[in-house]
Image (tube, rainbow, N blue to C red; front, side, top):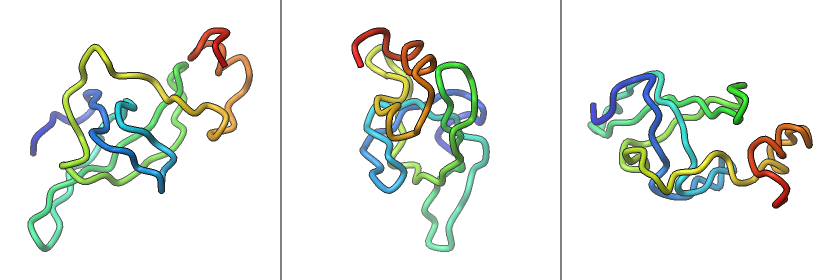
Length: 94
């Protein structure tokens, strides 16, 4: 297991099937080991207010350590969050 559970990590690549982009922050909550030996996680995706938006499964290779360039969800409109939440995340740049 590469990352500690319940600690934020970032996506190392886009996950279009989940509407997530490289650099989005997720929180691994469970570690998985596939039959072929591939490691991965169940991870929660949160809004800036801490609300769970979804839980995804993600391969270990698609995650990286949190760094200064990491961001909260870039595509608030795709998640159908409220304008207030989008403003909290992005300011007036939407």
